[in-house]
Length: 277
Image (cartoon, rainbow, N blue to C red; front, side, top):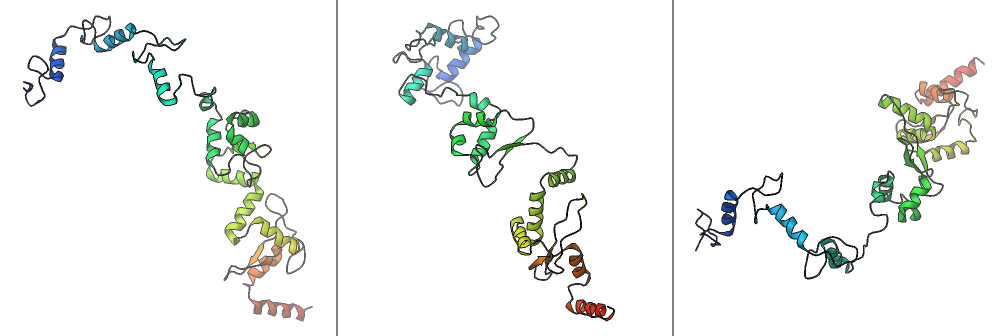
């Protein structure tokens, strides 16, 4: 026979009702739980389902593992839920977690360590293998500082790290200005790469090849930048092909630009000067 509840179709459990509808009907007419402060309906006897399950657990003997005060989850095995899970997964009731379980994740340097671990060759083998060796080496993080390499070609490790102080700025332009002042070599390298497609090392090689002298007049650079520091000799290149021709002093470089790289005009200027010399 089927449950008398309309549209149910389940088999009868009791009182012409299936198990689900029987429990619903019983709960509707049940008295409140006898535990003070509980507003749920009674499930078994005068207890709601929550307090009834707590009562059943309190009646079970303790886990058979020495020192464990938890009630047995499975009376057949004699273990509580924790030790039964350990047996099932690790075949042992002993704890298999490391002694520092949870301590690393709560440490203020843990996220920095995991971030550098994800970077290819981000950490040396010793720091990658042991978080606490890493912590002992770098110490406490200064407020707002970031961990950087001294030599970007090598991973972070003993002697190849420093805490970089954050740049405080009011705008993006102010940040870039301060960054260029703090990193003049990197700023120059980025500028050369962007404008001429060469690195700072390639520029220095060309500078040494010319013995630090202008490729036209043979003199040294005599002008200074806005901050008063000696100016690097400008890179001379063909504006049509982009090919680098050499390094010139500022005056010769500007002179070529004023004459529009026109050989005929430059020769005419030389003849003009010879005429009046």
